[in-house]
Image (cartoon, each protein chain N blue to C red):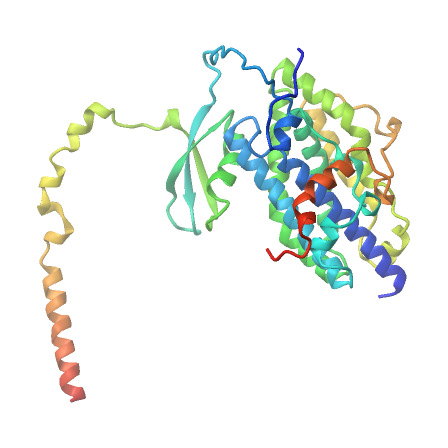
Length: 136
Length: 255
């Protein structure tokens, strides 16, 4: 295959790679040639829960670990990662979102519905008053 | 420290620092061009780590009375560099980049492991500090090596094998004996290039063979020596010119 080095670029790497100057016809991506995806879960401290941070492409599980490390753990504090094949995650179908539709209406299930907060606030107010009386 | 021990230590530090700088620069040439995005990020991070190792080593040289790290990195000409030929080679084929990565980083891992016991404390401290980074570099390299070896395709095996055949003499050039081997050993600074080579072979030979690559008898290969004495391939000077082009515009600029 003959290649030309005439592509104009200020980046020496582009010239070095001998990218052909002529536009090549795009043949499309062959079926099945895309890499599978993996979901990445990040653990910031020992004992902390793993939190989903995103996904990556990788040819196999081991390289998924290799890529996840630089992709999601090169800046912030990290002690471990989980990598899970996206296809192995069990999930609800998008059309089943109606299962959750009335949840926001059920505010009696909300922790804020309990009366305990009022008791705490009343106690705080009382102790503050007592302290200010003592200091006077 | 006697004058001989000091010269031996400086020679070792220049070899290591120049290897890390030139290797890091060569790998950074793949930034934006590696086969997939995830690999681009991983390989670029590794290149960045290598430049960090070079900086730390040039700092150790500065502490011994040499010029500051920028001056050491950007103002010397090729005869003053002590890197091996392996790190100088341009790579237009990612198979070559990955095979070199494995051959070089197993040597780095073993070198720093030996240096954790060095009597020169700043170097022993640095060796412990970079241990985790180099463990990742080796993890990255060995994973690709297996995937493209007997877990790969005919094309991947063929290209990786060709890269191995081409690179082996250069890889053996990493271990070019130093004129100071005796001083390094007697001062307890470093056990020497021959010991390092044996440890490297104990890692690299089983890995390559189990991944399905053919290895010639190592003793039949003529190592590419000269780099440690300032004799380089034709590829180093153009690299230095490109690497220093911004620095040379204004060497006194404040960054």
